[in-house]
Image (cartoon, rainbow, N blue to C red):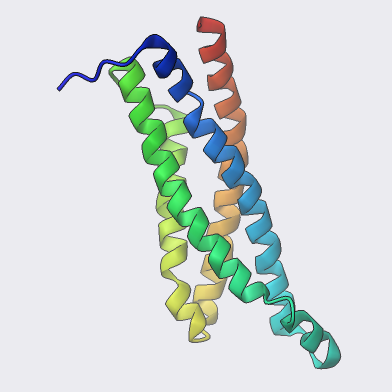
Length: 156
């Protein structure tokens, strides 16, 4: 099957992945903030703990994490699909490899949820390390992604 799209549609598709990823980077920073608040709530005592519990940071963190998982997987697949549709091939390089790694890490991180809910500290620590690794990779991805978008714009 040969998918024929107009040049303007093909060009516009180039921006689907970057837009989703920038939204995800912002959401990831928010999720990190919520996660730190969950940890703060867990370690607090007395009135401070009662006040922090009212923020429902654990529920918000779990919800944002679920959205991140879904959008990251969708965004990664979408970026790969658009690259293939527009070029007939993938460009295997640091951006693709790191993106696939991030997608795998977020799935692994999310899979730790049931263990964390049962109080497993090893799972909590692993979740935190994985998520900060993802965040670091995400920042590198944003930089290389901007370079890729600039190439697309200048070649248009």
